[in-house]
Amino acid sequence: MSEPISLRLYALATGLAEPLAPLLLSSRVRRGKEDAARLSERLGRSSRPRPDGPLVWLHGASVGESVSLLPLIARIRTERPDLTVLVTSGTRTSADLLAKRLPAGVIHQYAPVDAPAAVARFLEHWRPGLGLFAESELWPNLILGARRRGVRLALVSARMTEASARGWARRPAAAKAMLRGFETILAQDDASAARLEALGGHVTGRLNLKRLGAPLDVDEAQVTVLKTAFGDRPIILAASTHPGEEALIAAAVRGAPGHPLLIIAPRHPERGEAIASELGAAGFKVARRNQILPPGGEDQEDLDIYLADTLGEMGLLYRLAGVAIMGGSFVPGVGGHNPLEAAQLGVGVITGPDRFNHADPYTEMIAAGAALSVDNARGLERELTALLAAPDRPRQLGEQARAYAAAQAGAFEDGWRVIAPLLPAP
Image (cartoon, rainbow, N blue to C red):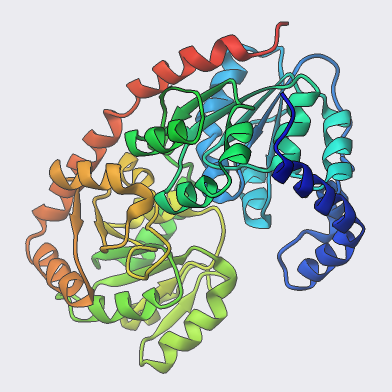
């Protein structure tokens, strides 16, 4: 079947614009958004040789999607050690985190820009037998180019928001051609499944990889060091915060009893200096983990906020916290962040009103007594005051959260039964 005119025009336009790609990528390097040492990978020129034998390629755009692939990578390595596993992602943050968490022998590369020549170089070099795309990464040249080369494709943990579905619905032929490139689609939830099917996708089951995975790794020595430094103070973690949330959460915590210590872990650690400046100007005493590790001696008694502007330490931070306030849920447009990493470590969560990215797990956790929901800063202060006034409540919230996380593991087996037959033959 011929490709829709819109996709052919897209391929033509991106091909004509491709000579500008090095210039645009260099501009992103100057803004800290690209890795200068590996810029060639974004142009499809791979920095690693391809090992002999069959290869499986997994792709997640940014941090959340990339990390969600880890349980699937581990299963492939266990069941099929003969396969080479290649993982691609598109952001520096995801690459840095994957460098710490990928199993030995798994190859990471930056995904090529979605231009015909870059995609062709990437696919010609790696020659994957199967491509597993996480969530909603629909890059026309990459997907259609892979299919033309006979690569089997699956969209796993697929998510389609209402807004994205409306956008694709304006180009129904293109949407159908793209989604039909995937032999199977495993949707995160019923709403995504319905939207993907309405656009022409072949949805064969459900799988939400963000509900799975082993608890985050940690350096136990660092847990001991920080627990000793912080003493008996109650600790509240603000996880994956965005601009506008740090000051809001800090003000709510300041009104809570017992002089709790607030640890802030911004979604983008490079904002550390700006956050410290903002909170310092508001009268908070702030120590940055990027500069002081750990805060020292008597000084920590007066410390209001420990700013964890480092990467890859959420396993440490959750193990210190009595409760976690999930960022991205107190500002419009972000949609909240995954509460399961906290739940796996027995940490109950508090979420704001904007959590559409993870609506189902939040709804289920709230109903199970594993999470709390507040509407605004005042509601957050009231909830924190109530929790800290009853020391057993954070523990009970955490126990319910851990039980909820444990109940999610069975869903992975159903998804694996769909994915396993697609793996390349030995």
